[in-house]
Length: 183
Length: 183
DNA sequence: TAGATTGTTAATCGATTAACAATC
DNA sequence: TAGATTGTTAATCGATTAACAATC
Image (tube, chains in turn green, cyan, red, brown):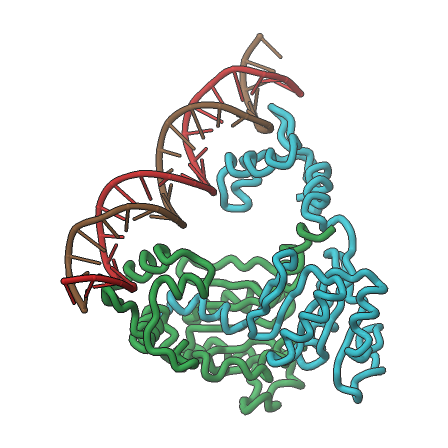
């Protein structure tokens, strides 16, 4: 809406755009504060700033990428991170022939240095693009080094402490979600 | 469990493994039929077969892949589809220099042929790896040709008829889901 | 002032859990 | 037969929606 030049919106309009009820919008927003005005609605720029802060997407998070196989390469070359709150700041691989090579504008580092570098930079976010059989041990190292959010491309369930969040990207799971509706 | 050689399980054990209650397991399963026996539990092989049929993952679905950029390449080379119910059967790209090239064991076809080929083969599932600005028009063609499940890698919301399912894979969205928990 | 829309309370709805008769 | 565990009903819990006083 901001990009469309709109200045003010209402719970009604937000609900219609999102396919949920106006009451739900008001309930959810009011959980975090009073962002609107009776009779007027919500100032879009103000609401956006507030929500950005609440969701911690008001800054740029440094991300460590581990594993430079096909997926790792595609992720590095993906243009979608810049401007959406994330920046790949460190890249690691275990293959000595890859270490030292340049990917994007980063140099690939050896995984031996991972714990040290992640700690030194205070990196809290990682993307895991390693083969399934290495995913858990790399995860353990990352968590020990202070990582708290992991985006895992390996088709493996990770076990992590309760304070660490994991999201999974597995195309097969997403396809299976939909197969129930096929015939 | 089947792979571990186990023959029988219970709602209690299933719940513990999945982190949900035994009552929930029984309720959900009973929605589709009576798969267990009092005092004994569930025969794992039988249950697996039944669930496979219910979820339509008891066969192999042909998938059309559209767009052979970085992500398309990584998807084609991904080994995880075989044996999990999906097989890339058709590959399309709009770039004439890519058409005719071989990827995996498939030949890349021109998008002009997409509608015809998808219809002829009765393909119902597609993976969309094209740039955002082309995602909607490619989707329209796919839907017209009979596709009912779309896995979309483009960071764009697709509008489709109610009978068509879409799942989105966008690493930034997944990272943002977790940023609320960072500090 | 009159109309619009918020934030919140109370009512409703749906999902989860507990309990238990049936039965293997 | 005794113990175990299902499928299902009833109770509980939590989430969504409707309603409305407050107020811009």
